Image 1 (cartoon, helix red, strand yellow):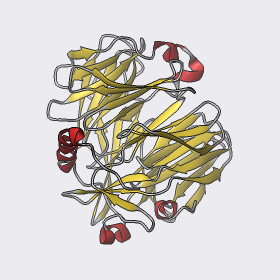
Image 2: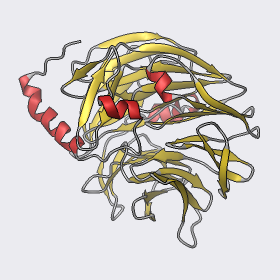
Image 3: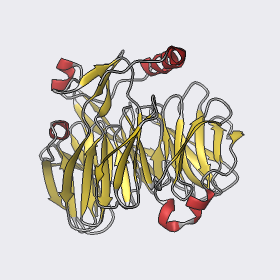
Length: 397
């Protein structure tokens, strides 16, 4: 597909590309991609990122909205999901007994000091079966799927890029909640003893204590897994993977239960079950607690020069928070109050964040919002939908 950029959009796109140029490299890149700049047979290289909002309706229809020309297409149908995870290209739609995988066909490849942007035909890749309800952890390092019936699967990311669902390994694990978190050298798997580091074949390497693990995210420093008393940071270099503990400050009573941030940045935001949020700086190995003064539903760290954090209140308002002082800098009107009030819809309400915009879906409101978090949380665009956007993912980044 050939893309022509309207002249009026060139200044904005220049700012987007300039902002992206300063982003750090990923923790690793497969050798094949390092040799060919991330190119894949059948893909077209573009001059700018082909950013899309890919959404799933309650009935399982997968919709693809081009954020440049605002054209929408339906990619196909999947089993109605109970959760959706993404690495910026692939969508992992979980439901009891399986995960359906969609290739959005748009992606960005980080070449350390610059980026390459690609577009190829989107594809419905099929389903990964398992026993019980799945939990997916996905990043540019791969995807791990933990089924609460007692199975942990690490997927082969290179095979997914070729359109095939291939398991690197499948392990028996204790039944119940858990995670398998991809690493450059294998994965971290939760079990009764804590976090088990396994290699790319599933063979155990070491185990580190992590009580009540919850939440994981990949940063440009390493991979984070949340624990009751802090976090484990897995840092990989030429000598292998080292597991470090980052404890909470003394006297902490409210822990982070999930993490979110602008992709690849060192500082991430942790959501608690109260009014507070945590900022974890993986470069400095430090925690900072901020009290928002009201219950929050979602948080994500922009990790820009001004240390902004975006948050969604339980009342459906989006906030921009100063990451140094905790002061609320901007607040929208209630945007997704009805969605958050409905337990059947609230789980799918998502903040998707990139250097310039935050995207928010309102399933009950049949709308998706594009918000300029650097401009007093200005609503830049509103995309009305005919069917509820039950889940969304920003793809192409």
